[in-house]
Image 1 (cartoon, rainbow, N blue to C red):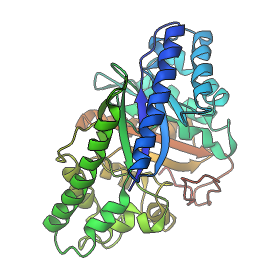
Image 2: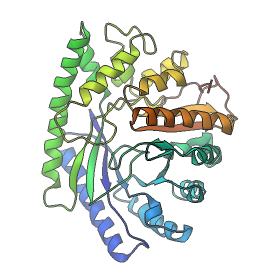
Image 3: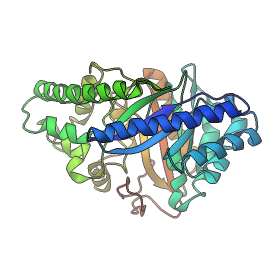
Image 4: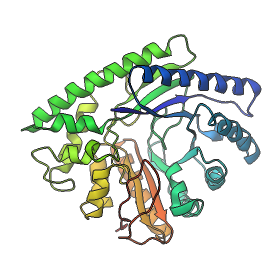
Length: 382
């Protein structure tokens, strides 16, 4: 298991003031020290990230937003790998999303598809249009990795792209932990046995992480607000979440009958782990971030409909979905509406990170050169 992210959060004022910059600088130094503590305990820490509250609360125009992003981008030179300025809630400010992602290569931002558990339909349609524009910013539509539509996501989740902050400065932990699923499910003969073994392994590992986090936060400005226990996958075949799930006696192959039950089993265990929890606390199924999932997609074993059905009992929605470059705005809008509708109906956090790839058609092979992606075939939206 690795630490995928230590995500610090900090609230800003409008406009950005000198004491805001001092606070951000102090937070960046302290989270760097927390990373060092985890490394001393033998953990690989992949990224350190910063999230603010939704930027509409501290930047009323493009000039003010640029001032904040300039400073946050400067912090990425030494202490942070990425920064997230949170979800957008209005059509007017949504128009700035392509500018943010083009000007600041370490920036993430998102859109609130739902408000008060009600779908913002017009904003959802405009989000679909913006995704098409964002696909033109970087090669193969890669900039959409840093953008997503959100439904009922709560503040202080450590995982990107959905992360945004609320409250005093604090930090949370997100793990890359799919290897623990493979370990728990090996040589199990029943549903109950698999759950018991997974609970034992995750409880032991998460409590150890929490002990380190609490100790590391002492004498700092940052409080520890929790661990997102979500099962986050890996591009390494021997750490694949999918291959781990396929060790269960009732799952012959991911996408076959029994897959939804396996997803529910994992999530039900996660929600009972006795640690301070934040974020999704579910099962993540990003198509291009797990070697097994990428393989099963290539073999035609999964679809958007299947992934959405699994999201009803587990994790994050639709994530890193490679789509045809010529996909219509209406099709993207429909996919976003489906995710938002499921989120509203179940009152659960879901997100949609969709990646139209210019020049690619359904069935074509992706060609990303990114350490955390496993190339696969472009999915059909139907």
